[in-house]
Amino acid sequence: MLESLGVFEVLFKDASVDQLAERVREAVGAPTHPELDRSSEPIASQGAVPVKPFTPRELAALRLVVEGRANKEIAGDLNCSEAVVKAVLQQLFRKTGTHTRSQLVRVALESHPDML
Image (tube, rainbow, N blue to C red):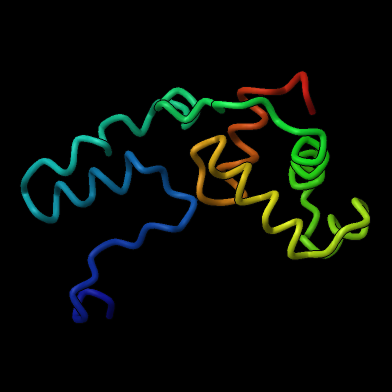
């Protein structure tokens, strides 16, 4: 049924970038962007090492993100607003070179296990 819609394979969102890059190469029949070839390196080793150390508030928020807490819960634990939590998370994303919470957790666990 999916093939009639032009779909030949489905990749789930937890598929690696390597798998995605390979499928794109197969589909277009040519190499993809060189950045995709570096995907097997940890995000932190791709030039995303924090420029500044984490502030105490960033570290506290990061610990709660690693625990899987939602922004509202983090705000309650840190006695601040959700807007402050979002701003702190944006700072953490910038410092670590990540874009999602799951990437942030991965980098935190790989690069800073002693801080958590």
